[in-house]
Length: 141
Image 1: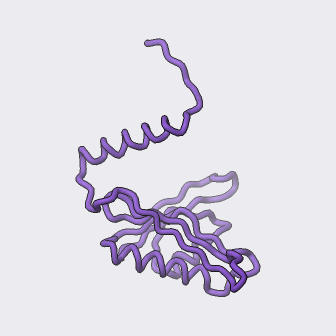
Image 2: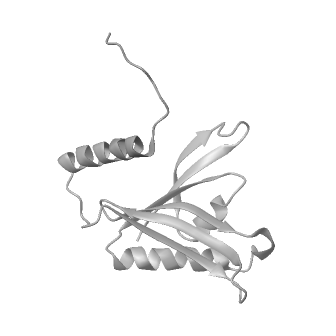
């Protein structure tokens, strides 16, 4: 075994690791989009500029969209803002050639919301967090 040390990564070291896996992936499967990562993030604001809801997602490498976060301020839930945001990023992703969207959510979050929007569960992680489930969902568009 070689001598080594383990340290907290600096920003440039995180980038090195990210770029390393991107290069490896590219050597195995050609990317189908020119720019490997395209952020598609949107917010809904009220007339005073206050953010009521937002979605963060990324179209990556093979025209796949990963929805990282969809959040609606609690007092504005059930107003349709989540649906508006999800439909918006789906539309943009589709215009950019996306065919597959995936995301994850917890049992105490929005699984049924996503199923209502055409997503299907393809995996479940039990006990994450303890006494709960994490659902992995996908949608072909």
